[in-house]
Image (tube, rainbow, N blue to C red; front, side, top):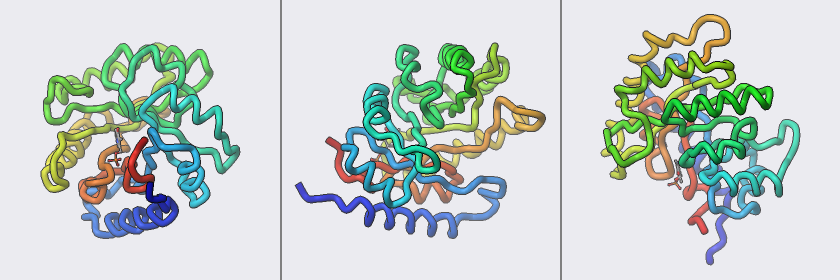
Length: 245
Ligand SMILES: *Cc1c(COP(=O)(O)O)cnc(C)c1O
């Protein structure tokens, strides 16, 4: 096994990320927050997460709830150094106990039952849980994600959640496989969808429960294209950590 130089790879990805941000059409990101790099660390050993953390990475993405729990148990830098955990895997109600109140952001909410269950658990834990809505942008029926046409109702359900303990910060996609240029149209479509929804969900007022600020899109192969199209969160795994176990 060749050893993977995680700090060098991370530095390279950061340089490419900064360059993509600098090249981006300013009108696309007029009100966007900075682009945040999430290191997708699923099926990677803790030593690699620690190496990235020592090089300044704080955001980590995981796909498996129990793996996330185990990593949190075995590795818990505190205070300002605490990792921010993002859950980017398939979501089932019976996994929420590992996630609510234990993650910065759950990226993959796609149905009202999940919102209700997250709201209830977050309320019981005395926290507000931030989430994104995963959108099946290409209309692939077999894939996770809400159909674009059903998105307004799902956001309305978030606004109405009984305890007000779940907050939606934006949208996420896993587009169909293809070259980065093939994928551009899906990134663009998600941004346009978000822009359209802002009319109905402006995110103004005190403590809005729907605030369409974040676009979680782009992975190792296409994060620069995603940034050009308005991504605010990119999820980069193998390009930082190397092949997964
Ligand atoms: C695994 C995964 C990634 C990272 O993929 P890489 O190609 O390794 O960068 C990003 N997003 C999701 C949802 C994933 O499951």
